[in-house]
Every structure is written in structure tokens, then in C-alpha cells.
Length: 244
Image 1 (cartoon, rainbow, N blue to C red):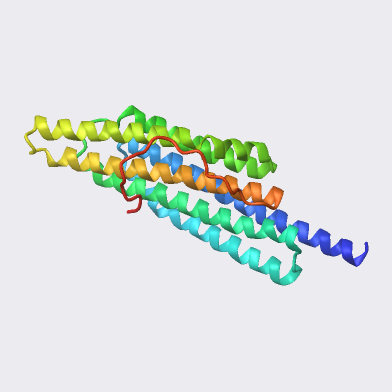
Image 2 (image 1 turned 180 degrees about the vertical axis):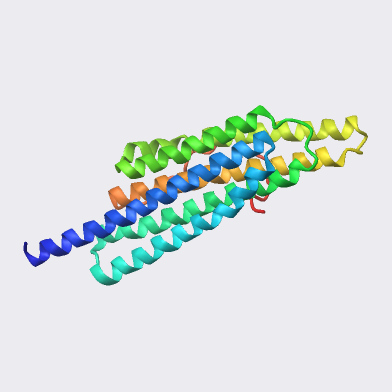
């Protein structure tokens, strides 16, 4: 084997290992999100606690990917076409870490809500959670297969999640108003739970945003160009901070 071929083969092996680590991280983020939504719907504080504890595994995955990427750059000195794969993988890891954070935040709010919750979670939130999960799954599948078309479809359909977010928020606010009127403002626990549901809805909206960000990175990796057009956006929702 010629020296140049050896260098190319070594880089390909290193990149393949980095991508395996990224797929493992994606699988963990997907599992955390699914578990968080199940705990929310089942009002399961014990499962929510486990989700919070497991969040450190996603953080460790991100650090491993960052370290691996720096090692590749230092040892292989990849050219521009190869460098964008390494750089893009670090950006994807950052988005997956944030998705894991949103799953953790949903779990935290589930624990608080479980102390006083009497009403079931609105079915629209379950539908929103399923759509957010599917979006993350599809974008990671497009990464695994280097499928630019599937990444484009994730990007194009982001407005569907936005529309559902707006619908859910209107539903939760209506429910909150009814609770305040029917109890003459005395049932603070149900109003507080509705507030947590608003934050959870925004968490799920941000999950979708990060999935779309990943789709943009995949397209950059495959084409060498960043998207310059604005992504399609759906119905406006009420501003609510997504963190915490």
C-alpha cells in the first residue's frame, strides 16, 4: 500500500469510528426523549428520576466525539472536503446534547407535576412528542445512510411540528383558563401543572429545531454548501422560555 493510500485509509477508519460514536449518542438521545415522554404521560416520577441520572451519559458522548474530532484533525490534517465531515459531526453532537437536555427538563417537570397532578396529559402533547421523536429518528437515519433527500424532507417538514406546537399551546392555555374560572383561582396546583405543560411543549419545539439543524449540517457535509433560504415555519405559538 502506498503512503497516500495508507493515510486515506487511516482517516476513513477514524471518521467511521467517530460516526459510530455519533450514532450511539443519537440512539441514546432518542431513548431519553422517548422515556421522558412515557414518564410524563404515565405520571411516573421514578422513571423520570432515572432519565435525569442518565443525562450524564449523553454529556460524556459529546466530550468523546469532540476529543475524537480534535485527534483526527491533529493527526490526519484532513483537507477541506474531509474536514467538513469532522466539523459537522461535532455540530451534530452539540444538537444531540441539547435534545438530551430537553428530555431531562421534561423529566424534571414530570417529577414536580406528579406531586399534585390529577388530570391526564392532553392527547395533543402525546401526538407532539411522537412527532418530535419521529423527526429525530428520521434525521439520524439520514445521517447513518448519508441520505441528502431524507435530510431535506426533515428540513421541509419542520413547519408541521410548529403547527402542532401552536395547537397544543392554545389547548393548554384554554385548559388553564377553565381551571382558574371553575375553581375561582383557588386550584393553584392545576394551573401550575398547565404552566409546566407549556414549558414542555416549548421543549419539544426546540427538539424539532435541533433535528432540523442536524438536517442542515448533513446537507452541508454532503454538498459542501450551507442552506441560505429560510426554513418553512408553521403557526406562531406563544413565547415561552424553553429551558429549565
